[in-house]
Amino acid sequence: MDGLGVDVEIEVEHGISATSSLASALEVVGRVYEGMGDDGVALLAGHEPLLGELAAALCAAPQAEIELKKGGLVELDLISPTSARLKGLLRPRHLS
Image (cartoon, rainbow, N blue to C red; front, side, top):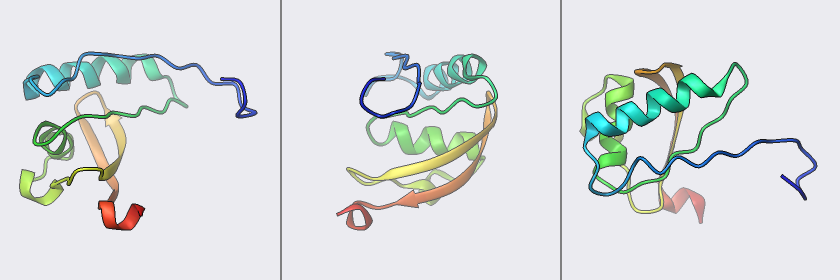
């Protein structure tokens, strides 16, 4: 990517949408994880309630514990294609 001073490769996966099921979103995460490599980073953007449900499913946590608000961010460390560790959660008020 030009302008950042770093050599990165960006791939876009359009498999998660507001109408996606949790199962299909988990399949997308699995594909992304498998293609990331050891130093890979993934950014997922989406809508509630699916994005919070996806984060909760990956962390094996009740959905209410990972409730995202509009404009919020959740940082996960993917451990495997189906599990993650919650690293951070920022509400919109923390980002403004």
